[in-house]
Image (cartoon, rainbow, N blue to C red):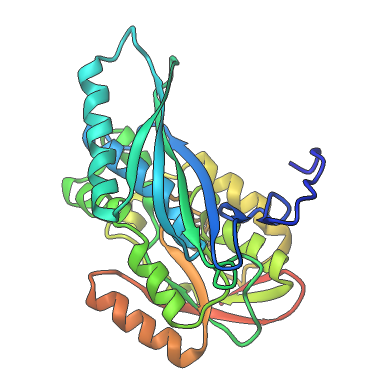
Length: 316
């Protein structure tokens, strides 16, 4: 993106310069549109479940901005020679279930013939221009809250190899299809200004960008970061995505590993699909946010703090 000419438009509140979760366009002093698009290859075998995961993953960017989704379009890449239309119907039904639960409308979309199937959504949401969550909004003194456990990348890698136990798969599915709506609402109520969702770049990758754009350092307590049941065992069995290793390579130049074992650091970089949010709030507000999320079935935790700095991440 750095090779493209920056757009100079007064109403473009968030564009590509900061690498945030979505673009934001102001339409009045009290309303702004949030726009994002995301699609993924299959992460599970069941077509409807894949549709649900892909939809939850796509709309997560809207929630990460503190916004509410309004409207979406399907993005479909489909291998018509090998995959039936009935399977595609199941994918679309899964996405519709998520849209119904979240309260937004899917109104059509676009399909292309592609040897590798992919599915996702282009989503439009709405937020007050003065009440956005952004990756530039993390402040020294903030306590960091993570709203979902890590380990999706490891588990989905094991799923593709047929080696993930059924109970582990069920836990991953529950996490991937859980909307980040509650996390977003709790973050806003806690007074957060900085937030991002944790997807393909992993916790460390998304935090690297947040630390850089907010001009702060982040201290992460590795022992407090929750993992999905079975994720560590599968990681120890070497079901580690290539994307996770690339994430760590990219982050290493600004990372103080704190003497942690390689596996522990890799799990913090694990590439997530439909992961949770991480946001900053005061210590008291962060504790209350975790309590509220836990009461609604989330596995949330305080995982660290924000300090003055220049874009580094320190593990402890």
